[in-house]
Each structure stands twice: as C-alpha cells, then as structure tokens.
Image 1 (spheres, rainbow, N blue to C red):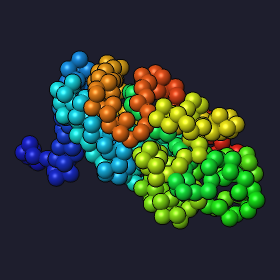
Image 2: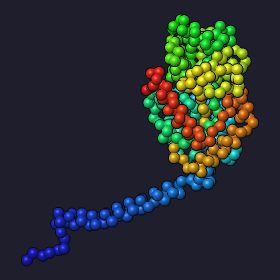
Image 3: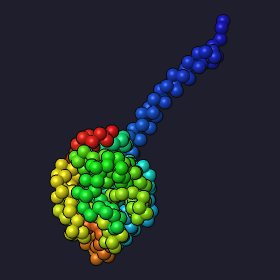
Image 4: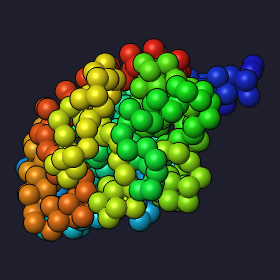
Length: 348
C-alpha cells in the first residue's frame, strides 16, 4: 500500500506557491497605489503657498539683456525698492542672449508662483516672435503685471551732419539710391523695422548696418562711420549735443525732446507710432492675489523719487500701465507690428 506523507511533488508545490503569492500581492498593490493616490494630492495641497502669505522667500527677477545696460539698471533699482515693500529680497539675474529670447523663455517655463519674474521690453515680446520661431506665445504664456517705462526711438545723425531735418535725409536718399547707410541696434530690431517701413513708404533705398546694441550705434554715429542711426538709449547723446535727432517714435512729442517731430507727425501714420514699453511679467496662471501684491509693490517703487531720477537721467519716459492695460497694449502692439513686418517682407 502506498503511504501518503503529506508532501507534494515539486511541480505541484510550485503551483501552490504561485497561487498564494498572487492572492497576497494583489491586495498589497491595491493598498500601495491607494496610499499614493491619497498622499500626493495632500502633499501638493500643503506644498502650495497661501497667496495671502506671499512672499515667504526671495524672488528672482530675470533680465534678458546684458549686464550694465538700461534694463539691468532699471531692474536693480526696482528690485531694491519693491523688495523693501514685500519684506523679501528681489534678486536680479542676468540671462542674456537671443535678442532677449533666452531669459524670456526661462520665465515662460517657470512655475506661476510669483517667485520668477521678467523685466522685459518690446523686443522679445513684440518684434522677435514675429520674425522667427520662439518657444513661447506672448498672448498665452505670461501674466502681465505692470509697465514701468517707455523708451523712445530717435533717428539721429552726428551733430555736424549736413542733414538738418528728416526731409533733408530722405531727399538725399532719393537722389542717391543706395549711397546712404544707417545703423540700428540689430537686424530685425524695433528700430530696424521702423526705419524699413518709413523707407518703404518713401520708396527710397538705404544700406542697413546691423549693430549689437545702442552703444555700437552711438560709436558708429560719433565716429562718422554711418550717416544715421536709430535706437533706444540715444537720448543722453542728443541732450548733450553730440547727436542731432531728426525724428522720434510716438504719436505725441517726447517731453524730454519737445523740439523733435515724431514719425507720426511727419505723416507715417500707419507705421510704428510708439516707443518701446518696459514692464514686468510672470508666467501665465499666477494667482490674482499674488499679481496684485507684486503690482502694488512695483507701483510704489515706480513712484519713488530715486526711480524717477534714474529714468529721467536716461532721458526716457516715466510711463505706467496697470496689469490689465499693459496686457491689452502689448497684444494690440503685437497685432499692429505683425501687419507692418508682413508688409515690408520681414515676417517669419
């Protein structure tokens, strides 16, 4: 008679163990994933800052242009003043390159928590995106907080130039096609677009010399290497008498240069009748309460006598718009400039 010992064969034993494992593992998996599903939302909830307590740590403000320029100086002064109001330091970080696109992209891709801001201007917001692909959308990817300045774009010649008026300059260009040259702050920059539009209206041909910032435009003008030049930041040289401005952007005359006619005044009413707005923006989706706190802190800084003195020393306009108005203006300007760059053949 065959005696049964209670032991199973190897194959039978393995199948029993597998069934036992399946029965025990499945409940543990369910439990494990259930815990994760409950814990993560709780962590996110407790990790998100209460807007009423903002800010609880230092804020970063990115400047998308080179150190020491107008944007950098403005950002540092505003950061100093607004930081006192917010009781947290605002740290300025220069992230230059790509005509402002590198720094602008960094902010667009940051969390919308109020701790990453951008001191921006018309170039990366309204000009560069219309002429080449950029990894952000100015209508969808930003929260506009406040406009804090408006820079003019004067077209100037050296003080001893034979050109006394802009009409003189145009008449010379018409008589001698391709002889005159002018410089802007860079290829497809705001000044370049503005002047190409004006010359297209006048049906004259000039040689454009792309520069690498306003400092180069000034050097080339003072050295007599170009016949004319345009750029934001020529104001000091015009005020001191080293340069003579023949026209300037804007619908109304600039208070710092009341004797200089605007391009709009000269008849170029479909061109670019405005200067270059400087402002502060953040990533899209920022809490309204945080936006308001930041706006109010920077508005207080904007009204400070030391900031007004800085803007006046640059011979630029101390111009303000709140979040709603700044947003609307930026989008409207973008649509206007889009039509112009298409008309003159410089659209992407």
